[in-house]
Amino acid sequence: MIRALSIVVATLLFAYIVFVSFYFREKRHNPRCHDLEIVVEDSLDKHFVSESDIIAILRQADLNPIDKRVRKVNTNKIEAELLKNQMIARVEAYNTPSGTVKLEVTQKVPILRIMSVRGNYYVDNEGSTMPVSPRYVAHVPIATGYIEKELAITDLYKFALFLQKDEFWNDQIDQIFVHPDGETELIPRVGSHRIVLGTLDDFETKLQNLKLFYDQAIPIVGWEKYSVISLKYKNQIVCTKK
Image (cartoon, rainbow, N blue to C red; front, side):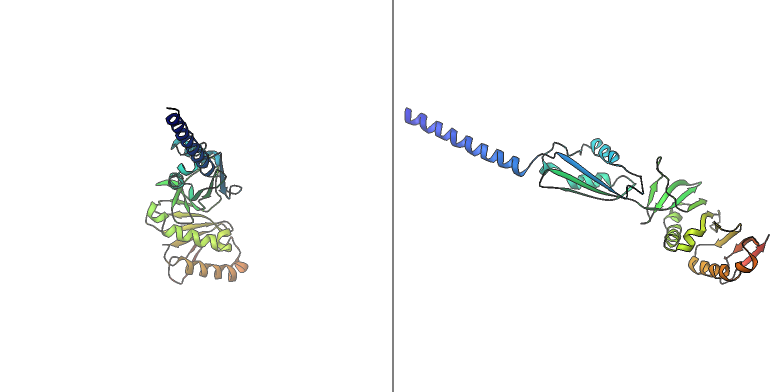
């Protein structure tokens, strides 16, 4: 009887030691998430999303990792949920051995503001749209008039990319206006004339010709000589005097 009792006690003690060993090993290798570290890139220049926005999104989707076991934190789901936000371009989520979940969030970069009868939004540098923020206005060229989304993310997107990369034209072009027939006018910052571009086909050549005209003719006649400068005809510049 005593021998049998000793065996039972020894077995229970062994089981307890094994349980405690695995329990503390699991806690050591699979700690609870005690901190969520969020880095929003370019947050000093752009304010489309904030750390509080990110936390609110995760809480609403029941993906807040705080107090969850690190191995149960699904970083892929976190990334997918945050990418549903149209202000966010990229997200990288990962765990650290210390029990911290880190999020690196990249905001979209707007290059054109669309303010048309068809909608009010931005086009970003990757050719997708993003909504207007109620708390931050990006200083980018504005396109107004009759603009369908397809035009915004194709021809106007390419034109905005060109402006972004060309220092002179980026400084000179203030506004783009699209007529119902698809013809485009540009409103410059310097001079009181309108630039009739016509279609956006071959716009780089048209603007190269205009730049040459600026360099050669404007120093002679001045910025106030013409009311309209038309580039719509191939390899021609047609000016209308005031």
